[in-house]
Image 1 (tube, helix red, strand yellow):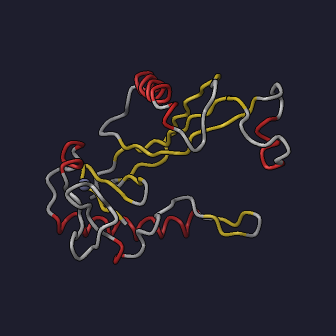
Image 2 (tube, protein in one colour):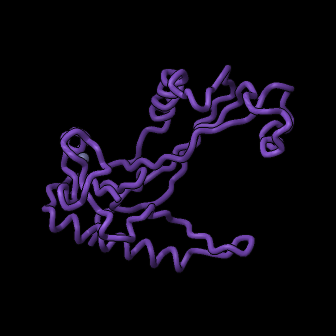
Length: 192
Ligand SMILES: [Zn+2]
């Protein structure tokens, strides 16, 4: 019996100064219905797993705070004069592993390394089967609802080094990861 937890997708959308070339047709849709010089933008999806159903009001406040605190750090895609901030929190799945950027995490409930590796292998199989069952063709392309980000290849599985670098050699840093960062967050990670 696997122990599953609620996983939510979190997405921030807002209106900001248009910093792209006005002739760039790619962005026409994001300017629709807005005054000249303004455009819609969003910050990409992010998944977060909770031990129990979160308080959505508190969660929205947390992301709003992070958004305004980190505005200046977006050097590559500057966010200037944002308004109409909307924080969209949607239930994504109930699972034991939460997808993160080229890694997955599970809550540390005292599992052994062997149990973790077995659990992750079973998770990957489960997701692949669900992708087969729930996938569909969209505009002629096969579309899968759950992204594994390379976890399908077992040789990619690895831990981070002591300083948290997760691009390390799996032979030197075999999975799973129980680094200090993981311990602080109460999770165990497999990078891939
Ligand atoms: Zn770690």
